[in-house]
Amino acid sequence: MNVNETEGLKDGDQCMVIGGTHKGKSGKVRDINTSKTGHITITVEQDNSVKFKTLGKNVVVVASNKD
Image 1: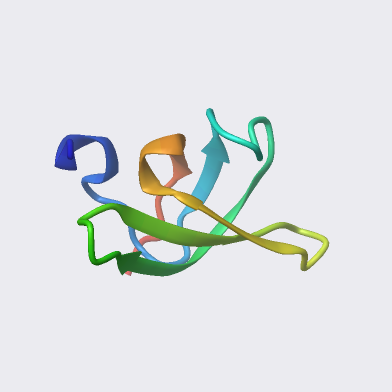
Image 2: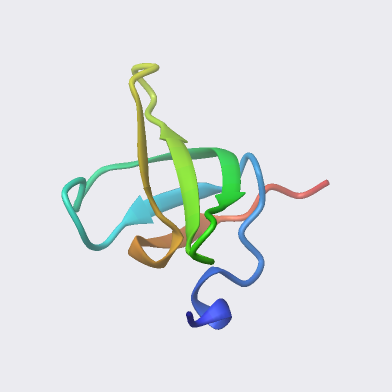
């Protein structure tokens, strides 16, 4: 697992999916989990309120949510 790919990923960040089934979609990170196998999974909520799950390695942060 490469932690650098999802380093700095936070709830509320705007992200773009660059791989996998949902490639090309974008939205806000809503839920970050680590599976039993060690992979990071996230829920992405699009602007139209549709949610989908994807692996953290498949996304890049477009705009960070400043706390």
